[in-house]
Image (tube, rainbow, N blue to C red; front, side, top):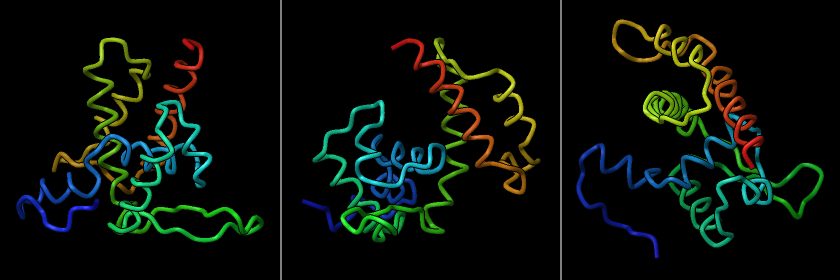
Amino acid sequence: MKRVDQKSHCPINFSLETFGDPWSLLIVRDIVCYGKRTYGEFLHSKEGISSRMLAIRLASLEEGGILVKTPHVTDKRKEVYNLTPKGELLIPILIELATWGATFDDQTSSPGAWIQAVQDDKMGSGRLNLTSNSKERLAYFLSSYHSASDSRI
């Protein structure tokens, strides 16, 4: 059952209650980087989310205003999920998480050049310069990850 009350009104708590579980961010990653849009496409992601958990997380992200669900254009039996403008604001967070993980994971398959490019792209404020191609950078990074992990399986 979905919690209606928050543990606190701390902004970090609010963020974690909205999208703080691993599955939610992986769903957002799949939309941004791999163009996945349907339930079946999410279900076949490498991380192996269960059908029940996927349904719960999609509903929660939709309820939280991160995703919007619309009927598929050609197959009315399917629904398509897209990021809302609020959801698109998670892209810089994904980039930062990917950079942090790539920096500290001893077995990372991410290209060092990508990590350096993201670091170079930061403005004096310590935040990513979103006028650059943030989506493309994240997609490039994660596509190299998936290519490398494909060869390990």
